[in-house]
Length: 49
Image 1 (tube, rainbow, N blue to C red):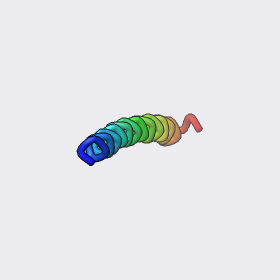
Image 2: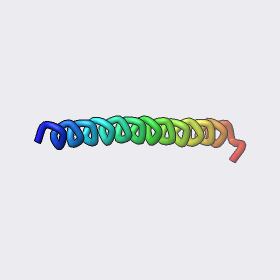
Image 3: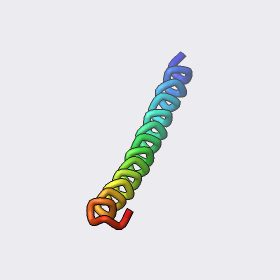
């Protein structure tokens, strides 16, 4: 029983780490898109659209 609980705990811990990495990656992607939108908005504001 102790072994099963240990395996379960490790599996939950590992899935938590993967989830954090996935969310961090998604956050970076969204940030990059926001930067590109901001750059394009500045270009259009200057009349270069």
